[in-house]
Amino acid sequence: MEQAKVYFTDLRVTAGDSLPKKLARLIRTAGIETIDFTRKMTAIKLHFGEPGNLSYLRPNYAKAVADVVKELGGVPFLTDCNTLYAGRRKNALEHLDSAYENGFSPFSTGCQVIIGDGLKGTDDIEVPVEGGVYVKNAKIGRAIMDADVFLSLSHFKGHEATGFGGALKNIGMGCGSRAGKMEQHSAGKPEVNQAKCVGCKQCARQCAHSAISYGEGRKAAIDHSKCVGCGRCIGVCNFDAIHNPNDCANDELNAKIAEYSKAVVAGRPHFHISLVIDVSPYCDCHGENDAPILPDVGMFASFDPVALDQACADACLRQTPLPNSRLTDNMQAADFHDHHDHFCNSFPETNWRTCLEHGERIGLGTRQYELIQVK
Image 1: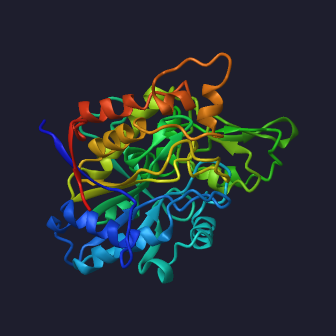
Image 2 (image 1 turned 90 degrees about the vertical axis):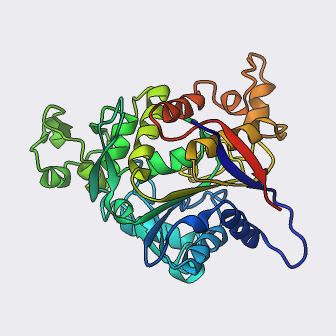
């Protein structure tokens, strides 16, 4: 496979310019105009940020991308799918409230906000993964798959399970429905924390496969031989008693993310943007953000999400760690072992390379790229 082109611009601006204008210039130079957007519904996949977290991308960047799509004749919408964990984005109503609270609304961004997998995270479609090793049919939010064109707008930062969260994490995990997220994180079967269960039986009423029963103390239990991993019970539990066990090894998780990403982008026009700013050590799913581990770098764009992640990672590895951060705390510890990798030094159990290697192996993209700077 020949080298991919990755376009980059730094964060310097002069009077009369702005970062949103510079982002629009970047994606136009990178070739987004070669996509036929005419009357095409265009999904812009991003992370709206868990309320309390302040390192997610500002809505201004989403508006800059949406405006370019509209100028090219497209009909953009911002989208993300519901979460598995107990936060404020686990159903569409709370998710929309969170998006609006963090500034993502039709009034601030100029386009609609749609939660991709529906009210309770169960509105999905199974998409075949060509060449999939771990996943044969990915469960993707229906609204995302209904779009004619797919764009990803990613905040590039650290991640406690995958090493970093970039384009593939945003696409693969982010576009998975609740059942899809369970499939990536585990064997795909939820479990009950009986200490939190109050025996309301709402989960059993929602289970179409009679997999939930009640034993001593009216506590719910899930029969995994009957459970199909749809995740409906997680969405309906008001006491956060049902959860995903999150028992998938990190390297397998990375491979599944790559396979889900391929399912999302295959067979339709797609384009990808990553901003390496506010490089927090954790995912934006956290209700807090720790101090950034690295300096701001800039904005990147490419038609190849694998090359894009590789270019962003390479740029980060060239940076000097910031003081008073998780990364430098780890590096100053008495038992520190230097992995010569900022993301592995932040979370030594992770290996982000396995995601990109698997993405390249299954034909999602290439890690070889030419970096082209845009002023």
